[in-house]
Image 1 (cartoon, rainbow, N blue to C red):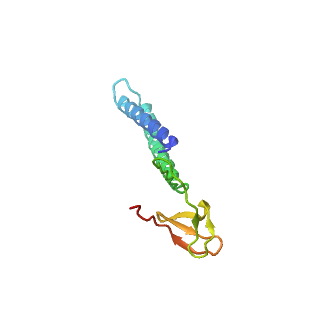
Image 2: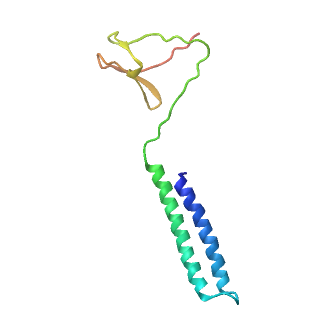
Image 3: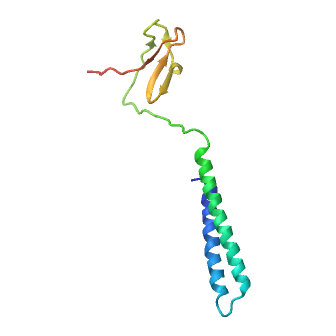
Length: 123
């Protein structure tokens, strides 16, 4: 949740609680009828703050795409072999590898061939 929506919910809770106290106080023998009006206005403000908090939370979910970062922790020393295109033999760089639907896909910059990377078992 965004900070603005949390603050809006907290202020709404405070406004609604105080409004109920004003409404209850207006019916006491020492109360005044104007407290009822203040309580109703406070309730409207509290519900408006809840509505604003919901709108802020919905806006935060819609804004921007979700970015997932994958970090690999490899044990020991790892040496990177140079990769070559299976079609033309041109060297490939890490910039040529993209994650598409959760699978690494390589596009050769020289011949334009696209294929999915697979890891062969080491045994």
